[in-house]
Image (cartoon, rainbow, N blue to C red; front, side, top):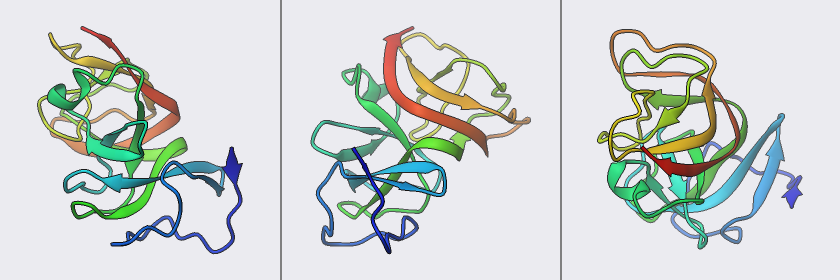
Length: 155
């Protein structure tokens, strides 16, 4: 269920929880889920959100046993164990590797928090995040649309 919580600031993190983990809030045409960081998270990182509301950077290692877990994007830096909001629906910005194409199937990579379209062996698809702008010749933060993303099949 999405809640319209008055006064929610999705651009800050906290050291103590102020909402239940997994709480969703709709704001400005986007939806965010309240999470706790399991490790430091960088702005625009793709994160895997488990059933307990723990968010960890998406990578080959963290996605290997996460089939079906939700995937979101972090809008601000988190320190380990901070609480805050991960975007799970709407127009967003996400970290990707070089030459990642728009409108392609994305997958996890060996670079924590960054997605790619290379379908590398052992990577997992990220179903529900689509780039609307391609990345150039270097890793970048690019425009995307998130549609209730989840960890998909292994390549």
